[in-house]
Length: 180
Length: 311
Image (cartoon, chains in turn red, blue):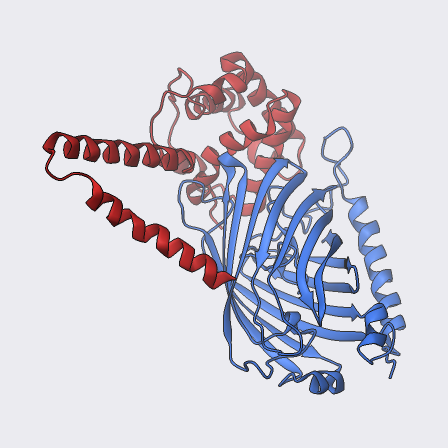
């Protein structure tokens, strides 16, 4: 059964060179056109494949659908405020946030989420490594914040799959945030 | 010829009592219905917290994974300094057979996982047909260990690098006489596997592939090795899951298997599943399973239900 499938696949691949040989070699223009078409097809496939890549690997893009889903600047500010309130009520996280400059963190966090979501903002805060250094943040604390952020986004009716897009951009920061 | 584990009932009662205790304990520490976190959250709870549903469930051989195949994830809501784990009880019923698996998996520091599982394969009416006696039950014990080698399936969202783990499963089938009669070469066997798991969070998709070296006939329920072959075979297993919400995932799985016994052809297994997480501690999985021919009976398919309690 498996072998049969493998042989079928093989025969499909075998037809490819035959097809290429079949393109008329005498017509230079046709050949160029065929190559251009092949090139374009490859590009389309590549773009499709790149679209499946994790967000961070794609680099800058104009897509602001996540920014819209979060409710633009007012929505993001509301989510961040709720997140901060939830965090202060969460015994797992309160110690990290209660004596911090709350107003400033709320503001910078909103800027950061806006930029990550593809919104028209600028992050004016310090780097993640610098701001978290020495706090002794462990993995449970990091994950707790993720949970509280999910709760805050739930409260503002951000669709689950959009939530995941924001979390996907935040998650790799664990490397500079978690110290132990 | 009918043989049932005499100590089985007692063992099972003890198991159910443990499950009930764990269930009560987990209910105590859960999130309140309004979504706020209870102040009674156990101080530095053992469930250090991970994204819900990115834990996988318990596979039929005890390791954390999909239903049919282990994943590279480590059992439990464990974290760098913590211990976590799961109890599971799984029941599969096809036209002619049923399989009950229950066990425990323990995760240490998001690095090591140890698991114990017991499988009871009830031949029901086919037992009589095969000359074993109705409801003849084959029993297998599985001791598993897994080590995460590198990668973080959940957090490394800016890279293609999956989480990769290597695992080993020691299996012992208690029904040696029957195994000898059907031509199995051994009553015990060891599986070696390598799993790669990746969550694409911005697509809400989870992939797993597992490469397993095994001699097992029907997971070991029909012994190890046979008259067709008694050497290790590389087998491929795959899972694909789509996260529908924070508490619901659906997916499909595939598992290829060796074909060592000439008396009964063995085929590959498939399933389509839905996993539902009630809270951080309790999850339920239901699946439609297509297990192929089993011990001369054709095209065995049916349902799979599994309950899992995390601690």
